[in-house]
Image (cartoon, rainbow, N blue to C red; front, top):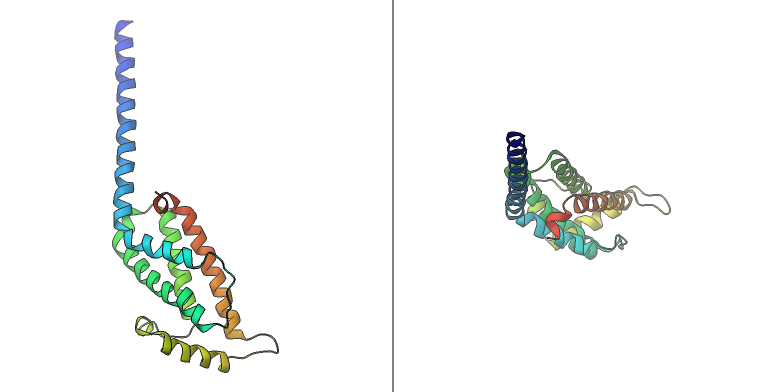
Length: 175
């Protein structure tokens, strides 16, 4: 009976030790993730502050550029870097959410009909001219401009995906 009790306590000790090691390992991975994703997390938090209210004046070029276009292209750049460099740090569902956000950001930027090779060199003046030109040239009905409608839908999809990523990474964002 004494040998059985010693064996039981040994198993209990090993189990407790193993659980503590796993917990310590998870904390270590959490810290590594936070450091590795620091640029992305900063850009993401900034984007979330800008788009707390999804209702925007879609006709206001200034608001579209500074609230969405510029931050989205910066976030897209960070997303590309994070996915290519730190893909192995993510769990499968985290990686899936990041890739969906990358896709939503790409789709949003593509809706402006600007070549991706030029998108990072565009400033506000160039964007403003392009936006006004696209609004004028876009097919429209009496009360609907298709270019504006596409941008509006894209903003909603992007905002929805931001919320999904926020929920998935809340432990890293608000730590």
